[in-house]
Image (cartoon, rainbow, N blue to C red; front, side, top):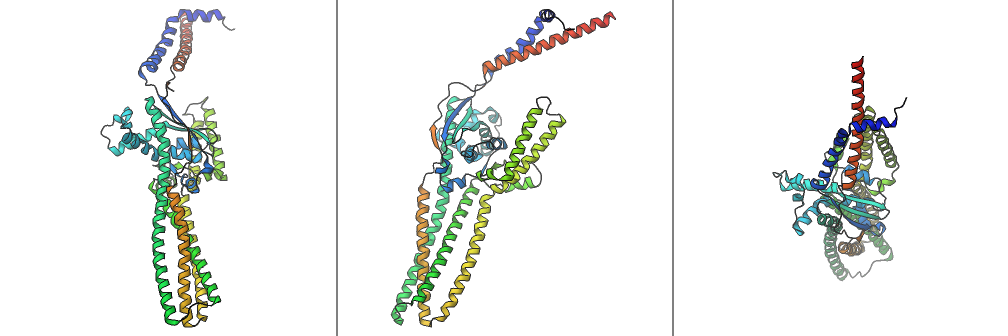
Length: 474
């Protein structure tokens, strides 16, 4: 038989002092914490527009591999493709270090001094301090892609002015980094092409001098039509080889630039292959990886497992065998996901190897064709053959010079070009209201939890007293 409602109120009325103490003490502690002890945290937010299709092919390739934590990567996996690989850049350690140095050098503010947890380790070296600050910054930067092609770059800090300053600096330094990477890559290519251009010019000048001298000595002023066709074939083959060599050099320069930016993840995958926890943070996957069938299946499996774990935690603790099993399965799928993504992490190296092989194969084919053309020179008389060879050399150098000149002009244009993979819609303004702690929510939440906990304690005490009296009566 259920107890009347009046009896519940009677119990509460008898123990109201205990209930008040259990309710008010935690509530007062929460009030003191959120209003007087905990520092308010502010969020500076910069809004960006991402017209990815407007970016150059180099920019789309260069954005594919950056270092970042799994926390960021898990958010990234559910991001839209329009902003996908830009999130990787913005949340990377590379940009965090750049922003830290920028704020210190340009604004005269050492961000390390604004984080008490770092300042407690005063024996840290400058390099160790920078690493610590970068780790904290990676946790406090967020890129939220609420709408396809539009994103908000936000940064959390206890100083509202710094929150806005750092958010804007992240965007500025990301653009600066991308343009530096572009300029360095194109500069390497320009240096290579200019050296080749000088080399070809000198060779061409020498060949032309030899041809003029030979014509004066022999009186042979031209070659026959068959020889001209032979010379044209030589030129076409050599120009193709020259173009392949330039493409290969461009890829090599880009790979060097990416390696200099800290994108070599060989050590990470060595750990992963050994079945151990990697020392390094995994980089973000290339955008092309999203279309891979195996990766899509693993992403879906990981999402299902994480959802199941969250549902299980509604009724079980983290030490529950079922939760432990799910954690093990999630770790296993993550490892497999990383292994699949590794094909894309090493994409630049793989492409370089493919292009190297293609260049070598093309060079071998070209050598075979040139050997065949050389054999056809045997049918010409000695003097005419010598003139054909010199005319061939001049035509080949002219063809190579044309290819180099065109590529050099294009590389110089790309070197001066400012990449704009995204546009700033709204710069971050100094926030006026903190995002946490949410004082009223914390206060009322603590009050409600404490109140119902107090109710439970009161009735447990009432039951124990009742059982004690029953035992004494027996």
